Structures are given as C-alpha cells and as structure tokens.
Amino acid sequence: MGIEGKKALVADDDPAILRLVAYYLGGMGLAVSVASNGREALDSFRADEPDIVILDVMMPGMSGWEVCRAIRETSAIPVLMISARRDEKDVRRSRECGADVHLSKPLPLKELTTQVQGLLDSARA
Image 1 (cartoon, rainbow, N blue to C red):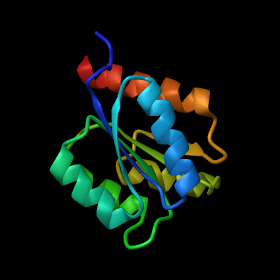
Image 2 (cartoon, helix red, strand yellow):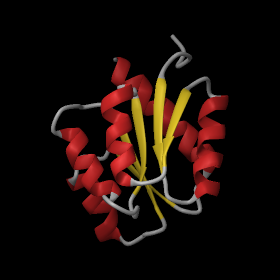
Image 3 (cartoon, rainbow, N blue to C red):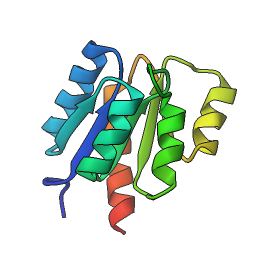
Image 4 (cartoon, rainbow, N blue to C red):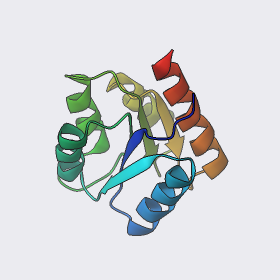
C-alpha cells in the first residue's frame, strides 16, 4: 500500500524551506498542509489530523519541541524534527520530547523522503 492519500503537516518559519519540503512531500503523493509558526502547527494538527508531522525546532510562538510535546499528549503519529541545530544535546532533546527522527539543515532531501516513507510504513505496520 502506498502513501497516496496520507496527510502531512510541515511547520517551518523559513518560507523557502517550507515550500521545498512541501514540494518534495507532495511529489511523494502526500497531501501537505503548512504552518509558519508553532501555534499554527498545533492548530493545524488538531484540525487536519495528519498522518505525519515535520517540525522545525526554532519557530516563533512555540518551538517545535513544545509542539511535539503537545502532539504526544494525544497522538503517537510520526514526528520528524528539522533544525539548523546540530548539537547532540539538541538531537537528544528532540527524542525526549517524543520525536521519532531529527534531521539537521541543510536538509538532505533524499534522507527526508526516505525517513518520511519509513515512518509512514512503520505507522501502518
């Protein structure tokens, strides 16, 4: 079974990254909604019930880590964090808040699509 028809939420305050990630996920067959800050991301998560969430760590309003914690209060859907922060403590913090994967910017797009596919496949299993 493919991922067509699945929904993804992408949240990043950098419009260029937001467009790029949305483009690649759309190319995979996902229906993509976007948010430019943490509050929008959480509101969109609650309204749209996506199958996967991709969050930038550093966003205005609420950090990606805060959004991830809020998502984990009600859902076990896959969450992938993206960040310019590469420090091991930041990767660990992503895991501690409940993220499944942490990727560093600049985003390796092939790795992003591989991780998204893997997370969606695991969620179906």
